[in-house]
Length: 638
Ligand SMILES: *[C@@H]1O[C@H](CO)[C@@H](O)[C@H](O)[C@H]1NC(C)=O
Ligand SMILES: *[C@@H]1O[C@H](CO)[C@@H](O)[C@H](O)[C@H]1NC(C)=O
Ligand SMILES: *[C@@H]1O[C@H](CO)[C@@H](O)[C@H](O)[C@H]1NC(C)=O
Ligand SMILES: *[C@@H]1O[C@H](CO)[C@@H](O)[C@H](O)[C@H]1NC(C)=O
Ligand SMILES: *[C@@H]1O[C@H](CO)[C@@H](O)[C@H](O)[C@H]1NC(C)=O
Ligand SMILES: *[C@@H]1O[C@H](CO)[C@@H](O)[C@H](O)[C@H]1NC(C)=O
Ligand SMILES: *[C@@H]1O[C@H](CO)[C@@H](O)[C@H](O)[C@H]1NC(C)=O
Ligand SMILES: *[C@@H]1O[C@H](CO)[C@@H](O)[C@H](O)[C@H]1NC(C)=O
Ligand SMILES: *[C@@H]1O[C@H](CO)[C@@H](O)[C@H](O)[C@H]1NC(C)=O
Ligand SMILES: *[C@@H]1O[C@H](CO)[C@@H](O)[C@H](O)[C@H]1NC(C)=O
Ligand SMILES: *[C@@H]1O[C@H](CO)[C@@H](O)[C@H](O)[C@H]1NC(C)=O
Ligand SMILES: *[C@@H]1O[C@H](CO)[C@@H](O)[C@H](O)[C@H]1NC(C)=O
Image 1 (cartoon, rainbow, N blue to C red):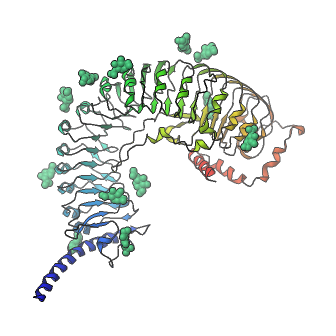
Image 2 (image 1 turned 180 degrees about the horizontal axis):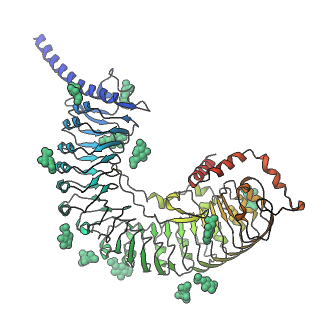
Image 3 (image 1 turned 45 degrees about the horizontal axis):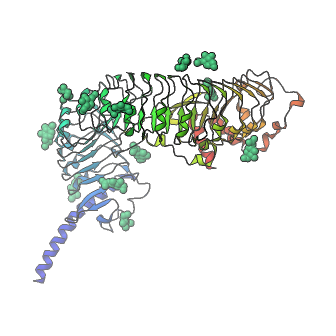
């Protein structure tokens, strides 16, 4: 009796033992294919002295005591996938994304008939996408984004009747989208961005219309956008950005929340159906060849819209006027168009506005003092318009405390520089500024799904001039602080208070009618990288305090009436004659004119008493933008 019991028990035990042994040897084989495990995740943990089910990344089912899930994501592993993995016959979840697995996928994986979830994203797999993926009849998610897969999308994927998410973006997949794919009736999310797909969207895509579940469609094409997208009535997100799409801008379906087709070659006018999109949040149409006027309804929709970027197109006419109370707009970019008229006062209703970029248009208005109500504003760009008049020391209910980039250049502003205005720029002035989050950027990089998809860069048109170069948005990190009032008709002296804007990186007051001395307080702008005071009527000596500007890379004092010795040493050793041209009476290096002995300043002898000299020289030599940014950050950490 006991013997029988024992015997039965023994059989069960050994059956269990043997099958989990299969799983164990599959893992040991996998481990032996891993060539680099920098954090020793597997090296010691995957040891035969403990049960497989306690190994890191491994989950066993309670019923069969077999491995059901393997998750090695983000472990920085390098290696290949061993064919023994196909022996894990109960495996349903396999997630190895964000590692450095390479090679091709072994056909033995076809044995994994219970597979529901496969994520191989962000590795270095190559070869074609295996057609045997079509065998995983239970598969719900398949993610292969960010690998080196080539070839076509296998038509067998159309057999995956349970598939809900398919992510193939960031590979080198070519050819057409197989029609069979649109048999996957449960598909909610399809991401094919950044590949080399061609052709037009298969007509079967019309089927999507009937599929209540479809929420996201991410189709990035290389040719004409099919207007049929407008028929996808369930679509909530349309993201076609950064391609070479031609043809007319697609009409938005009614439930759309994200309408993002930036950076293509689309033509046509903004479809009037956009006025019916009651849930629209983001409208990013920038960098195309769109024309016509901006629909008036945009103002009405501002209770749902948070970001509008229409920059770099050919829009004309006026900016819509009726921004409603409760306007939710955070970012409005309509730069580089042909807009005229004035800035709508109703924008003052958009209390949360972070970014307003209307640069390079034909706007004709006075300075928008009413912006003072917008205490979240961080970026204000009015560059190259026809703004005019004095910037009154406007009602100091003003609280532009978060402003960090202000560009009024190339307008017709006049009068004195707005001293009270500078006084209130706390984001540039003190420690407070270091804690101001750059909201206008944070929303730019929203959802990065496990499928590695969409970036809607709704403020991509943003740029400023600094160090004589146009700096694009990408580089406009949170740390950027810019005051550019150049090419206007400002007069009077440079206010000393500017010296209190300790976090300022770029100051450009050139091409105005400024008089008087360069305030020595500017020597307190210890972070300054670019200072341009050229083409004014400044007088007197160059204050030796400017030698304290340890990060200064560009200095332009040319075309003024400055005189006396040029400070010597530190950054001043790096500037050329160009920095000083057109001043009647300057002397000393780098100019050929020597200073008389009575003009010599003691500053000249400071040179050797600064142990940091080598460091700053090195940073100048490294001189590129990115390097200097690094230096800057290093400087901050110190
Ligand atoms: C392996 O890792 C798992 C999960 O972190 C842990 O529970 C287990 O104790 C580790 N085993 C060994 C032998 O280190
Ligand atoms: C795998 O682990 C990572 C990190 O813990 C987690 O984010 C991911 O969702 C897991 N994958 C699966 C399929 O559960
Ligand atoms: C597991 O897979 C390998 C290679 O695919 C195979 O040689 C082996 O016989 C399989 N079975 C067991 C029990 O390991
Ligand atoms: C891919 O993985 C690397 C680390 O292996 C990580 O730095 C990078 O951010 C990941 N990229 C994406 C798009 O997830
Ligand atoms: C899968 O799809 C292919 C091509 O679409 C088809 O020929 C095949 O019969 C389908 N069925 C299976 C089980 O692969
Ligand atoms: C899209 O909708 C329009 C108008 O409802 C219709 O004429 C057209 O046939 C539809 N296209 C497809 C491919 O379903
Ligand atoms: C907007 O919606 C209304 C009511 O549903 C409809 O009559 C009208 O044609 C739509 N307008 C556009 C431009 O689609
Ligand atoms: C837009 O606002 C204007 C004025 O506030 C109003 O007359 C018009 O009916 C609104 N349109 C819509 C579509 O809400
Ligand atoms: C700006 O508008 C004013 C008043 O509407 C007009 O008198 C002036 O000529 C305009 N200026 C330019 C440069 O268009
Ligand atoms: C700027 O304003 C002055 C008068 O203040 C005027 O003479 C000049 O034409 C204006 N320039 C432009 C470009 O509007
Ligand atoms: C300052 O602004 C002028 C135009 O107003 C521009 O030409 C110059 O390059 C700018 N200076 C620097 C150093 O960026
Ligand atoms: C510069 O800063 C120092 C210390 O922060 C201060 O004592 C000095 O008054 C400032 N100089 C000017 C000219 O603002």
